[in-house]
Length: 433
Image (cartoon, rainbow, N blue to C red):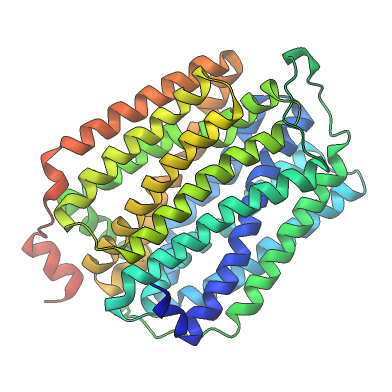
């Protein structure tokens, strides 16, 4: 797997991506913590996530088309600069004590717009950096990098925000609304996040990529280009099942992880940000192991990948209930470690499968569709689940866990999971054959 790091372009890209994902996971913890301290409301946490996710969902397919028309490297470079500016602004407003929930909403919206273009670019760039026979290893290293960020980022954020660590618990009544001692810590966290985006953008200036095959535009509208990619994915039974299953999974998984569990940690522990950071870091540690092993060992047959994926996602859904039912922080770390190892292992193989079976001219749009299905429903999920969390936090988390296990169980045994044939009409349309 480490052979691909001998290539200068991939090595520079990998360094920049590593720095960037650390920043991503600093803000992933800091953002919901900021909203919770400002409002004390799980519903408002969900609403801010919705504000960030709405433009991302609306514009993501367009982002994929832009990537196909330009290049993943350019799109990543420009969006990193934009995100750096947004984090610097938020950090400054926190330092001077001028941040309000309205400002947080505005920055979340702007961040979502940038993400709509960044996500398809970052999932499309690997084929332009490595040879096709090194694609699995390249994807594994990118995933390994991301999960290193999941390990390091939340731990850094927890320490930076809290200033010190405590594993003690407190009663529900002990929670108070307001930034208090966390204000300067949150400012430092967002400032650090902005610096990571700057470093990533700087490294991308020195990366050179090969040009992927592009669509012959010929006056074709961007909307029609997006429709071609949708028709391709929908025509392949295994892809259709995989994409729909991932949408169902993420609808019930992301909101609990990024809205419900921070609120649960805040209620149960004195330093909830630190405990939540430990649990997310444990997931990242397992995912690091899983992504690394995916790059080293032989891949499963294509026909088995989606069945395995849904089987492993069943356990990921179960972790939410396991944490609710058994409160000790170390237990949450254990089950998250196991879930992370399986999730990242299978995600490397699913991504590689998709990239190998997708025509290059459609790669940006198909990967943007994957990102849309995995995060596009988050605005709706965040509002619905945020409301449910405010009514009954633990009960809503248990319902979400059961829904994930049911949806993924159906996917694991569905006959479409091993069917990859492309109808001739669709094949002619997307390949020009």
